Every structure is written in structure tokens, then in C-alpha cells.
Length: 190
Image 1 (spheres, rainbow, N blue to C red):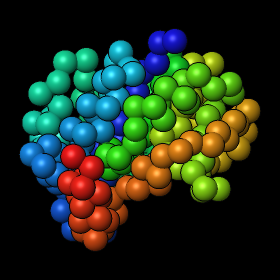
Image 2: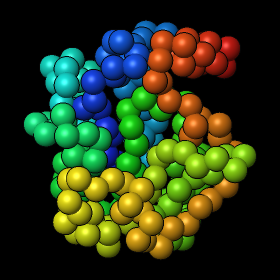
Image 3: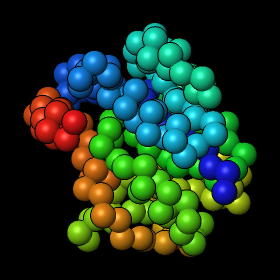
């Protein structure tokens, strides 16, 4: 089943105090790790940049099948980036913040094979990322006001919560402590 991806990489990274997409773990940036896993399951990947756009461009320029688009409205919040990325989609797509480098390929594949128009992974009772949005929702999502948010939109959809054996769906980088924890997990696993 054809599936694309939108990666959100436009934010300020204010809690981390540095551009978390460009943080390096074993010679690869956090964003590169997210893209590399997505490339195993997606034909087209759209990265939405905003703050530190040129830094994100240097990272995405390394990849084919990856397009960087600019969200000039990124100061309005994450949902403006969701809408910007969705405007580039024409098929089912994963939506993922760019700071989730531990998600397994098997998680993406299990989500692709699931039923529902808006699919949310669950690990030990906790909801995580990415979400999978079916193509029939694209126009509705594009029409959603920028003042809205993904949760409000999701709650008006046919949502499927699926159990996933992947703690990575819960592990993003908000702080430098989160980064150090994820870096340690990756180093132990390699």
C-alpha cells in the first residue's frame, strides 16, 4: 500500500535550547535517523521547515525522495506545519514530529496494515507518534482552521488505536536530558 510521510521540523526547540533536529547521535542527526527509517516504508517524504530553515535544508539535501517545504507561519504553532505538510499529500501518510528517532520500521508497517482513517499507535496504554492519516481526510484537514489542533481534528474522525510493541513511539526530544537518554539507548543497541 502506497504511503508517504510528513515530518515536522519547523519549531523553535525552545525547551532543548538548541536545534534538536540537528543534534548528532553516532554521526547522524536526529532528523536523519527519522528520515532513514521512513525511507524504508514511504515513497515520498515531505519535511516541513520553518525556524532554522537553512539547517534543516542541509540535512534534507542529503536524501533523494525527500522534499523540504517552508512553513512561513511556523510562529503560529505546530498545527500550521501540519497543514503545510498535508497540502503536499495526495495519498495515505504518516505524520511525525522530527524528534522521534527510535521508531522501528515494523511500527510503520503494522500501522500501514491497520484499518481506520486516523491511526494512533499505543504502547503500554499510552498514545504516541507517528499517526497515519488516510487520503480521504486530506481535504478536511486542509480546510481545518489554523487555530485548531490535531487532537480536535482527530476526535472528529474514525480513529483506530493500535497496540504497538515499540516504546520509541513515546520517546521524543524535548530537553537535553531526553537527548542524552535517547543517545544512550541508540549506542547500547548498535
